[in-house]
Image (tube, one colour):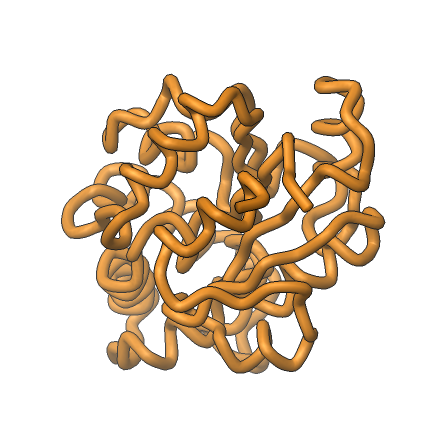
Length: 217
């Protein structure tokens, strides 16, 4: 089996962004008069988009007004600091180069805000690799709703059978299932336990292992 369209999650899949997410969440908590959270706790809150991240980071006692105020601060702070320590996982650039050279269609579908996602892609020099970057505010619905994958299928006119979603969390695998495409989970991301529980078609421990799956070797 070979794949022509490969759709990637961003955080915990292509990029190790845990440090910058944690520092930005904690800067927001300090702005709101709260103490820091551990990076591991922040990582457990990631995956459903910035509004959910802020709701979880502030706790159930926070008002909607507090969450909205914190979200505004977080978006502005994280936009400025999203590349302080964030980098690609080992072997990711080489894998993307190889898939691009093999004429695969590559795209990003993340629940991270699209403007920040595009800033990270550009900052890491990956613009040429992806024909589209969709974020959590690109549509009315976020992952696991399949609309992002559906739009990418429409744009490429490729069938579901040759489409692969790659991600680190159960949200990504569920998105693939909802869209009727195959899924590959990565074990080195932010939510490997939720990824495994969702039972993807493939599981890889390092990004270079994706290349033979996509190319059908």
